[in-house]
Amino acid sequence: MNIKIFTDGSAKGNPGPGGYGVFMRFGNHEKEFSEGFRLTTNNRMELLAVIKGLESLKTTKYPIEVFTDSKYVADAITKKWVHSWQLKKYKGKKNKDLWERYLTAAAPYNITVHWIKGHNGHPENERCDRLAVGAASNPHLIDVEYEKESAL
Image (cartoon, rainbow, N blue to C red; front, top):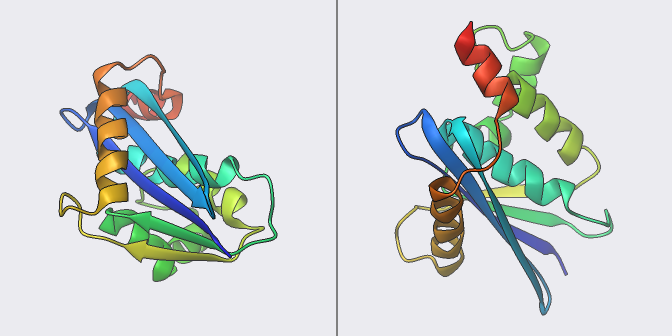
């Protein structure tokens, strides 16, 4: 048994209003959720979707499979770029706040990340895309770190 976390992010304008969508499956149990932000980027929403999925877990007992259509997220994790970015204090890298949050959220788990081609008929990815786009269309949250960084 393992926990499957399917994720997607969206931003209209990039930067612009954005959202993420998460769909999770464990055996016969399913859960989905999403949130929208008034100003953010697609990469932030792709990464935040993975983080929110991990943060919602209530057990470390099972292996985790994460499915994302973001090469940015998949490559940074599977190729361990995020660890070298961390060692270099994220010099020249964006989204330090979220990568730090990801590392904390991921630490207790045995995670395998799978990249899947987006908008290619993958049912769970399409479901997450609808959630993310819907959330981006009705943003109600503020991506404080992004807005603070972009104001500099």
